[in-house]
Image 1 (cartoon, one colour):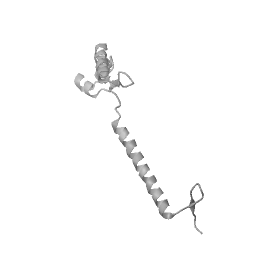
Image 2: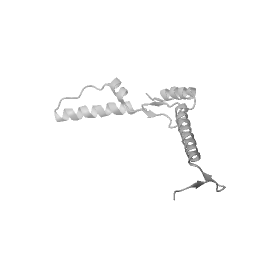
Image 3: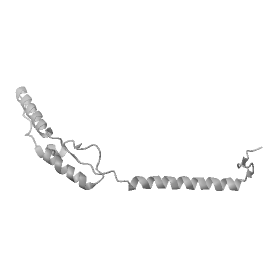
Image 4: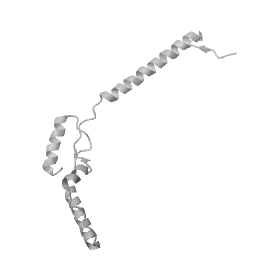
Length: 120
């Protein structure tokens, strides 16, 4: 004796009806996944302003000076001169504001203010 399925009225559900219900459920699941995937692509995350904090370049120069002094005390070969452009190219950038701006104009204004404040 096998399992039989019934609806809420107690009427038996045939195998063909069960297959149709299963196919309909799989179609709904496929459409739900496609809708969720489309939403991710169409959402804009906002505009973020990032740069090098004020004072970080000076700290790097001082650290390089200390390294040169330590090398001179040890009698070793002094390191190469400080390369400011190379340091700026590889410096870790931090966000000026943790929350992104919804408008590009607001981010542009924040960038201008950050440059005035000494951000690189």
